[in-house]
Length: 227
Image (cartoon, rainbow, N blue to C red; front, top):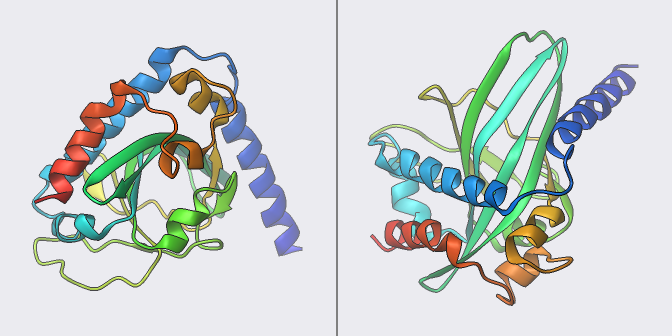
């Protein structure tokens, strides 16, 4: 019975989130550019914070970064969270991308109100990166995730495919991304790169498409990782 309720809650929350995210299939180029610019702002917000020593110390070893400038969590009893994200990957000293994704999480239990968070997920393993090349993955199922340590002395070793950092109104933590369903947003990939059926491997592995509008985000990632 409990599993049935949880499953129904997930389907309802996921349907609501994706209805909001996918209401307009024909999207302007500026929508993708704004998300990329916002992702750059989010990355720099985290990197400027003196409490984010773990990201500073480990981003050079990262395989990729999944950045979501805005994840909205809402609900009462049955709820969920959702947002958009970009994925950029590192090969040698060079960064590539972005690929675009939708995020959705359902939850059951008492909750009320609206919360907006931003997130940086540091992808640390090939397994984590490969899972993001699929059209859909469930974080915590297809790839393990752990909440990243925060604080000026955060030096702990984290053994997970992905390490997440979230904050809402400047307060770190609070948004659990375990169980989040991540879906490739092919419509946004196509709009951003001006081609049809652009998949994450085309962007991040084969590097067969590029967009110069991403140079600021990629340059910041390279600068930060090279320190």
